[in-house]
Amino acid sequence: MGDVLAGFHATWEFDSDSVLIRFERGIRTPKLFQALGERRIPHGALADVTLSPGKRGTVVLHAVPRSGADPLMETAAGQLKDGCDPYRLVLPAERETLAEYYRDELRALLPASSGPADHFLVAPPEGPVHFKAYDGKASFDGKAVSFRWFWTGASSAKWKAGDQTFPLADLSGVEWRSPEIFDGYLRLIRRPGSVVQPAQADQDPAAVVFGLGYGPVHESLPFAASVLAATRARGTAAVAAALPSARRDPADIAERIRHLGELHGAGLLTDEEFSSKKAELLAEL
Image (tube, rainbow, N blue to C red):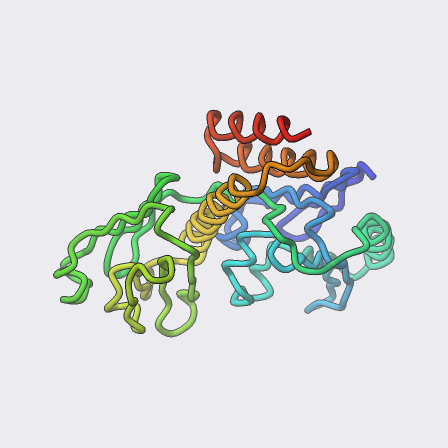
């Protein structure tokens, strides 16, 4: 398509295989948008595109993501307010006809299947590698998540457990409860059988809790999404490595190499891991 559609707080650039969303900077732009900067959304990551009336003389063009396609939205799990949804483009009502045109054009490019994706199709946000929660500081170096407790906020259970470091290999997922909801937190989900995690986040050494001014959405959500994407990437690589060596469909191998390339480009696989797995897949042709 090669066209551009500018709205409030964001601009959509339409390419042949994706939509590039560039978020504006400014005091009126949601902080989450400013933190994200820009995001490229492949057509395959979308289930639908809708157009509906907005507030105060506006219309809203909404690219609906497929379940499981975007680590950011998977982590948010429906907790984002409409004004902070990065898939919504708000336009003046007088541009409704133009918005209808782009909705129809984009819909025509979407894949026939809009069911859940079996792996992430959108790169994780580049978001912060650390942030301050109420009871501790969370850090992520791409290989492990670390929690360093604050004596002013951490529970006695966390102090007894001491500062924590969790390699990605020990994790199966991430649970994020928005700081804009009562009792918000970020919890690392440990692999089944490794340990029984307390139900309350303030007692769980694998969780940090939020509070007023601590763990804001624009810091904690991109952080959690990056951890989730990295955790899933390790799982995908492990499953691929365990597959039988029988010859497979060349198209399937090409798709897997493309996905590995996306993981590598997003920094979730090292050069060595990417080259090694690519060579294994090519050997199966």
